[in-house]
Length: 541
Image (tube, rainbow, N blue to C red; front, top):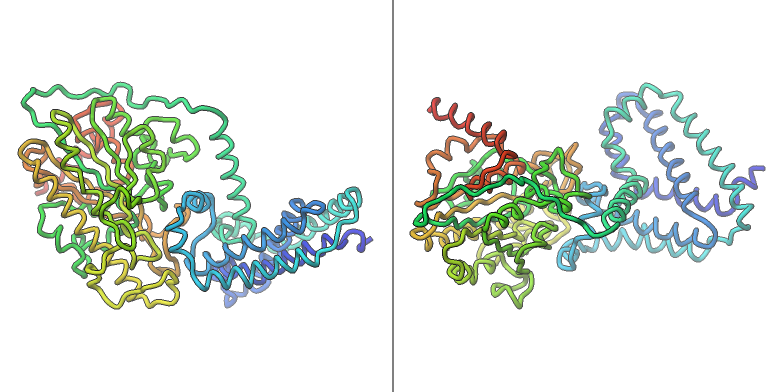
């Protein structure tokens, strides 16, 4: 009987599952031991959890592997799991739906920044060679009926085994499933499989048919202004991977803001992001839904704030030196400054300052119009921070000059990251200099806000993209600042009273509406709360 249940295919599936638990789940085991230290008498429970997830992986692969395709399914999982193991080990990331979405949206240049010798060794040792062995040696199946009978009986055995592993530790498992949900994010390959299914489901739903974009803020109306009133000229800079605590304007000890320090800017010190990745944060910050209501599957079915402003006659231009606008600018003029044929400031890569070239001409071509220009930076995109700035901005040394952050010291990683912040400081100061040329004819202002932050080794985590439920503040506390020209409706002195207000990306929608003097009932509650805070601060000062 056991020979029939544990037939050749089932033995190979079990063997691959055991192999994956032993060599591709180091991060899962490490996180498990942090939550349940062996010193507290948790040896049996930890062993039970590892065996439970091995059986769960076996159960999953058992029903994914059928007939002649079984060897190819196992080979794929060996390759995919080796990559997941590398990124979880090297950067402390988890492979969830957002991370898979980021992977799909990664361009060739960004992918090149992630390639390393260590990644190749992981892929070769844990993926390619085992996959080759499976493809060469796994025997043929015994036939559909025989295979199905064996699968069914073996599945029952696995389910019984899982129950027997849980029963002696019911109280610990109650804690595990209720209080340590994030541990499951590190289980390889079960969690990335679950995430891939969710992502595929969302893509299928999104491709069901043509999307009819629904209007938001239908009551939006532009305040009447006298003809001689200056028109708005606003530049919104969407930063990339910039932490608030790395701006000298916020008290960082390194001089990362020498240029902005000379300008009359207000750094908003308490801004939190909508997500921990560009794919989430960028569409979310322009959406009315806010972080709690944001749904990546449906966000593009509704107008964003740029659409609302366009309806009010605002002339909008989106220039992008990042991957793309993540669907925000699909109905707007869009220019790709990753292309050297468009961006005139390119060396080893195209620089953010290239997005400023030609803007004077663009502004002069639209006299008598309110203008909004969105500049989407490459900023501090990691892990190759040393590539994000020209050589003359390498002022903090020594520098990590590899994308394998594990090979660098904390000092080298931080110096490379801070040099990229220094270049953003220069870029923003140049943007302000451009706006000053139109100070007499327009109401000028610049708003800068980063899409998310970055982990630089704190708690063993690197990069970004952690699930928001347990994301560290380094990935969500983002840099943001404002500069107002002399004709702008609000005074810089007044703005300083709210510099510590707990802003979030949710505030961008109504902030842009307020900037262009567009009123709507959807913003009443948010603006009332800000006004009340402002009044309290004004009285206190």
